[in-house]
Every structure is written in structure tokens, then in C-alpha cells.
Image 1 (spheres, rainbow, N blue to C red):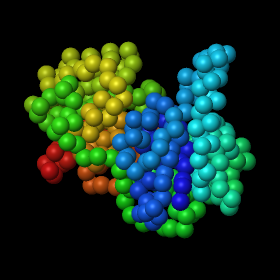
Image 2 (cartoon, one colour):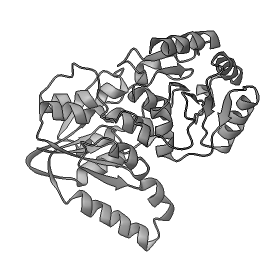
Image 3 (cartoon, one colour):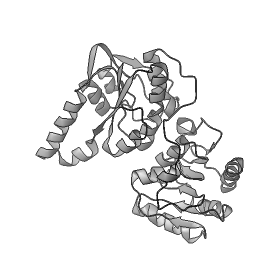
Image 4 (cartoon, rainbow, N blue to C red):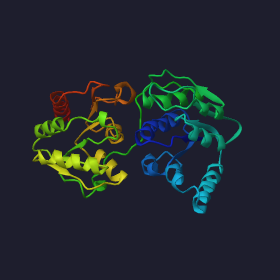
Length: 326
């Protein structure tokens, strides 16, 4: 059986799609699985050794140069690569027009199925027009967890029930793979940055948490000049904090993978730490906890909810419980 997964973005959404791979192979061990993903996230998908072929989709970059001959040549090459295989099943678990177009262009064998979402989740950017590319549209409860959605769509199409914890297929941290920018001792990482201001946890709270963790080093990553300034302001109030240099995506993944403790707001890197089953405190300030909370391990604590951020003492207590549990 040949299967193609179409989930192109974003970081957290691609991560949350990974357990589909283990589920499919658990029930269909001989299957081969390919994946279309935004080019910036190919290295994340590549961490899962059970994905055979990754087909990079570069729409974010192509949009900036549609008038250039080289861009048009890249787009043509993408669709040529996409159509090299005939698949038994193509799954679009994003439900957008752009992912529907990819699904529509993919080739299926005679009797093959193109399977997608019949509806979006609450607050999602689901585009109903994507259904025109489906042979099968799977309805789900609008409050289905982000990890469960793709798993349940595949289960419905392939005839199995999802009844076990998600397996992201990510490697355990190895000493040999520990990047040189990380300290040799145990450390905490604060994933404080987020694209939406309302999802931020206050600086005073981060500083109070960091002081409670002394003498454990606290590492502060950032992804934008604004986040860098915020990290520097936090570090000024923390004797045990270090602002990191700008990291590549895979260095940021390694930062999560090797952390003794990860604390972060509702963002992709926090969810990556949870997927690696590192001791993780997820902080929800302005997004619904039900949608993305790490609910597959007692090493993950989810605090707060939409419009109800947790207090610093609550997060400190959760962090201490996780540190004492191992």
C-alpha cells in the first residue's frame, strides 16, 4: 500500500500530524508513506524514519517570485515529482484550498481514494472548497484534538480504531547529538515567544519562575528582534539565564529534545518538547487548551486556558513536580 500525506504547515500542525505514520504502520505494516510539506519543515518530518519520501512544497517562497522563470520551473518540477507515484490513499489533513490542489494533482491507482476533512475544528482556517478534491470527506467533532484529527481521518478510511497514545516517531536524545551551544549540565528552556501578543505570558511571571529554578541554567531562545529584546529583558532579572543566539529550526528542535525542563506558551516548539516527552509545562493564555494540550504523558502539565492564564506559583509548582518526578 502506498500512502501520501499532505500537511504542509505550520510547525505545530506538521508535528501534530506525525502520529498518523505510526498508526498506519501499526495496522498496515507493509505500507510506504510519503509526505508533502512546506520546505522549511522537511527536516522535522525527516526525524521520523518511517517516512519514505518527503516532497518539499515552497509556496511561501514561490509567492515572492511568481514572475521569475526559475520559480515557474520549480513549481513545474514539484508537480512532476508529486505525480511520479500512484498512491492507494492520499490524505489531506489540513483542509485548505492549497492542500486540496496538491491532493487533486496527486495520482491514485484505479480504485484509490483521496480522503480529507468534511469540516474544520473550532477557530480553524478550514476552507470548505477543499472538499471538491476528495473522494471521501470524514466528519469529526469540531472540538477534536489537533493530534487526534489526522489519526481519526486515517483510521476511518483504513478501517481501524485509534485507541492508544500517539507515537510521534521522534528519536530519543543521544549524548552524541547534543549541540555544542547547549550547556553540559541539565537546563530549563523557556519558549516565551509567540506571534500573537495575547498568547504571551507576562515577563514578571517568567522572571519569578526563573528565580525559582536557581541554580539550574535557563536558556532563552528567540525568533524575532522583538522576542530577542524580551529575552534580554528577562535575562537582566535572572542570574541563571542565558539568551541564546538565533537558532535554526533544527537547533531549536534539539534545544527542546535535550531539555531537562521545558516551559512554554502555546507554540510549536513547546509542543515539540511535549512530543519528545520531555518534562514540559504548557501555558495557555489566549488559545483553547483542548485543541493542542499534551495529553499523552504524565510528564506534560497543561495550565491555563483561553482568557485564563495561569499564575506564576501554579507554573512553579508544576515545574517542581516534574523535576522531582525523574
